[in-house]
Length: 250
Image 1: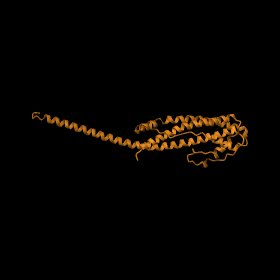
Image 2 (image 1 turned 135 degrees about the vertical axis):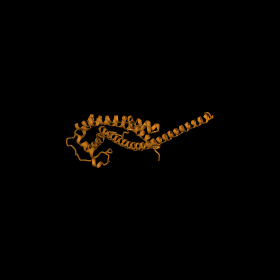
Image 3 (image 1 turned 30 degrees about the vertical axis):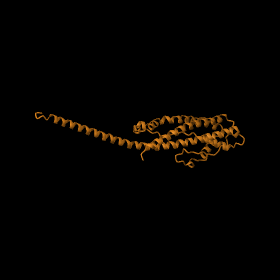
Image 4 (image 1 turned 180 degrees about the vertical axis):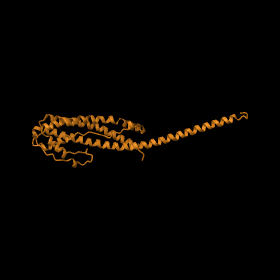
């Protein structure tokens, strides 16, 4: 201070402070950049897993839709037999009833993004919203499916038993119907000869059953409703897959 060097010391001190601050800011920036890079790597891993999951979900959904179409088709043919019984073959009717006896239920892979905290890694806001709403979107399909499943395993099964058709329909279900839901898709392994019953109702009695006719009508309305909901869900999955593909880096 005696030699009038106060200004130089202050300038030096301020310069040191500025350099330290710049160093801290650079270190923070480098750390931030490094964390973002790690997050982008994690995001890519999550996106690839989601892509596999939703491709599987789409495949399963379309299999269920195909099965429901078969139910509707068989129920319509069976109702036509009620309306025009002339020329109807009993064994053919049994096969249609067996096809209508399916109760497909959609059981998609459920991601746990929200609870795991990985949802925050996804930067695409539209994709994030669709993934967040996925569980509630599935509910619409499953509610209708469960109504039909309860109908099949409660009322439909009981009506077939009352008509003495349980064994015949089960035999046709095991050996004649398509079963795309099998994990290994080996339908031959599902086949087993149960045989037909000697106690089953004759054709005219089957086609006089008001309960059976009513169940077939329900088969059409419920499965058609489920497929309409499934079509909306199918479009949602396809949009999710398109958004995921756009975010995945080659």
